[in-house]
Length: 233
Image 1 (cartoon, rainbow, N blue to C red):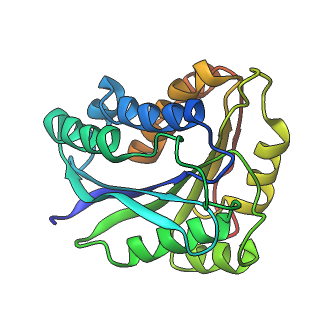
Image 2 (tube, rainbow, N blue to C red):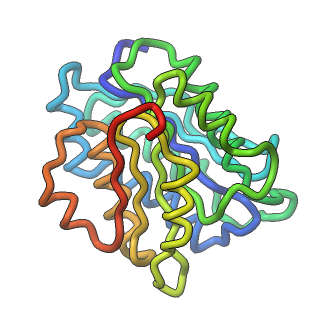
């Protein structure tokens, strides 16, 4: 794989708490965000004009599944091909048995391993976590978090909104305090399922370009926490 402006690992929750509606939200949300005009424009405006993306699903400790291996995205056709793979192979939420709890530490560790093995050079490397719960399975989260940050990787997160439409503020607070970290790390929490794709799209724009102006951030529906600077997030 050639050099890219940013390498992004999408780490998507498919634990037992992820029902079909939530699975659709994540799978379709990532595919739609990746092919949106805003993302394609952000990619083209960078120095190299290409990004690397990978997509895997995770649940309890030791349970992770690669949906999209490292893929070069330099324009709309590349993005459409990546999105098609996510839609075709991504979790549907119907087979939930045996997935167990939510190991965010596993998500970080697998994401870090994928970034370690990125087949090229990337100006920035990002682990992009989507989840509906806190770390309740596997190893403690802080050693995993600090290991990723120490390598210069950024950990961002998006809190999956509950189906009742109530903002998931406690989860966003948890992500902000205990999960995200690295250069300009941030967490987003949409107000409800309808806002998830919008929030995910803006999240990816920020990760791809880092050139988002204040009024664009303010236009996001719902709550967003943005942190910047420092290895500790």
